[in-house]
Structures are given as structure tokens and as C-alpha cells.
Image (cartoon, rainbow over all chains, first blue to last red; front, side):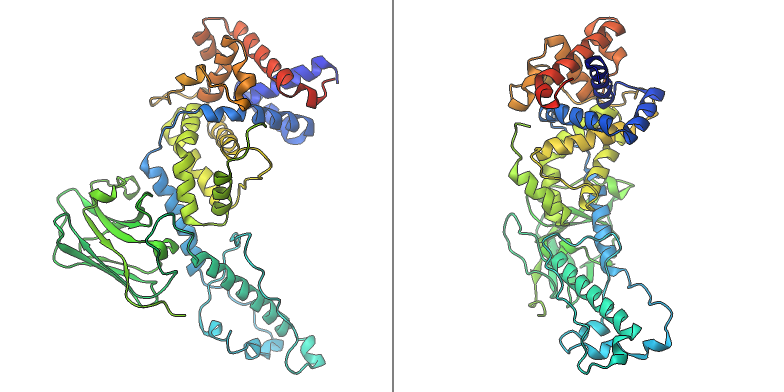
Length: 304
Length: 178
């Protein structure tokens, strides 16, 4: 390649990365770049050359609704991973008369009764996730027929999946190291919070079931919101971080069945009054300005 | 790349990929302002810029974009993601109209002398100005021409000189120019 050609390509790809190539020529060039490794390399170099200019960018905070949308998407995914039922087994076959569950040791057997949530297909366990223990296909009494039993191997695969899911779930429930106290119990156990208003009057009562999975919040006396406003429920994980929007709270109270994993790390729960029609546009309240706020306390130790 | 990776941002990015909610919140607090300014500068429309930021963080969370930790500073890597996504967001829509106050990039006209920025700092002022406006504010040639008070052809020549200077000054030796 001559220097002239090389310079022309450098300029062209530089202009492309800067967004100075527009319209039809841009689309044409994009198609070429997608198939030409030399052009791809030049584009990559330009992106890396120019990218340090991000250091010069001013700090302009996006609207609160952006964080709310991100939280919603991530929490929804976490909840989905947790509550999705396992995929139904394929058509039962005669060979499936072998019951793999009978081979499970007692320590594992509770999993059989529990509707163990399997991860959705795109769920990637943390990279530091320890490998699930290798499942041995060796039954207590090896019989040649058993080895060729399709049900056994499906069961082994199922156990591996189940163990992987348990490992993933355990890691998911494991709290990230909180940047500030108070330290919370890792998960589970009944929790309670009494939310007080700015005059320190007890106004709402929040409690969870003994598993810490189902939250109920009710007013201690009728609390109709002012005209044009509604209650918004917030979870405070860390006083230095923005609270997590748990959605609208009807004046009569609310039950939340699938709590986000963040709840295990939450130290306080709050309620704000907001006039936004769209809940995602609700103003992010400062902790001191919450209309109602209460510390979450653990009533009993989580079950082992 | 002369700047060293910020270990705390790199660790946060790894934790976000591992779907640790607090890491996501910390990362958002640390970098969303700059990334949003970049997205808003390029798209010039709040809804587009917000969509870019939302998608960027959601994709990080879902592990669809993973920081390669190959020596490129995390913020620089994130800036590349955001800028590419911002350009894709407005692709085919023509020169974007301005529907809000653009981020104040005025300081970029006098960039600090940081090692990674040195080749840009050393450009002649008109070339530097054109380059920074194109990068940070998504300025097109007609707007750059207005800003520099020149014809579009002159502006193109200015920009192209800047690009060639960067190629030669920044990594011409390692590229092994023909």
C-alpha cells in the first residue's frame, strides 16, 4: 500500500470515527469496515487515539429517571431469574421410570420439593463462581442397565444444573461488601420497619415473612395523599447512594412478592410524596427529605 | 496508551459484570456524568442521550459488554462504548437538531497537558479546536466551518491535517508506515 493510499484510509476512517462521514457514504463505509480487517484495524486505532478526550468531558448528571430505568431493568432481570419456573421436562418416556431423585442424598433432597428457580438462558454466574461439585454418575449399586438408562443421565444433567443454580443463587444473594455500615444479615429472616414522618410519628408498618421474601407495608392510620400526589416506595441500601425506586405505594398499602436481591442489603425503607404521573419520573428524594423513613430491623436470625 | 487503568473503576466494572448491585450504583455515580455529557454532545437530544446511557449500563450489567482490562483505562473504554452507541443512535437521522443546552465543553479548547492527550494538546489551535468540537459536540463540517469562520473545504483540509498529524505523531512508528 502506498503512503498516499494509507493516508487516505487513515483520514477516511478518522473522519468516520469522529462522525464526520454522513449519510450514504457512512453506511457504505460501515459495510466495508465490517468485512475488511485492515479498515477495522484503522477504526480501532482511531477510537483508541481519540477516546482519551473523555477525560475532558464536563460532568453533567443525567436525569434521575435514567438511573431509575437502569435499576428497573436490572432488578427486573434479577427477579425474573429468581421467580421463573424451571422449564418443563420433555415428554416422559418409559425409560424415565428410573427416579433420579431417589439417588439424591438427604442433604440435597430438600431441593427436590422446592421449586428451584433455574437461571434464564442468558444468566451468567459471576466469574469467580466456584465450579459446582462434579456429579458422579456412579449409583450405589451399579448395574449395566442403569448406565445406559437415559433417565439417569437426564437426572445427572438435572442435578448439575440444579447445583449450578444453587451456587449462582447463593452468590447472587451474597451481599456485595457494603461501603458503609450498618452491616446487614446476608439474607432471609423476618424483618420489620416502622416508618415515621418528619414529626417522628409512626405512620407505616413494613414487615416481611419469615423467609424475608414477601414484603407487606400498611399505614397505621388512614393516610390519603394530598391531591395530585401519590406515594412512592424507596429502598435505602446505603445513605450515600441514591435510593432504589420500588414503585408506587397505594394509600391502603401494598404487598411485594418478589423482593429484589438488594433488599437483603437495605438498611432503611422510605416513602416520598410525588406528583409525577410516570413513576419512573419520580424525583429522587434525599434521605433527609423522605416524607416517611424507617430503619429495617431483623426480628430473627435467618434460617441456616 | 500511557494512562494506567484506574484499578477501582476496573474492579467496579468486574463487579458489575458479576451483577453486584452496589457496584452498579457506584460505577454509575462515578462515571455517568461524563458519559452523559459525551452522549448528549454527540446526539444533542436528551432522549437519545438518556437511551445511550441506559443501554450502556444495562449491557454492562448483562455482561454483553465486558471491560477487556488490556491496559486501556476503564473510563476511556467506556467513553468509546458510549460514543459509538451515540453515533449509532442518531445514524440515518441527519444532522441532529439541538433540543437542550449542550454540555459545556468550553474547557476542552484549552485541554490540560495530560500524557494521553499530549498529541492533541500539541496540535495547532485551529486543528485542535476542530477536532475537539467534532469529538465532544458531534460537530459536522458545516458547523465547524461556521465556528472557524472558513469555507467547508478549508475546514476539511484543517481537520485532515490534524488527523494525519495525530497518526504520525502518536503511533506512526508502531504502525510502520509504508
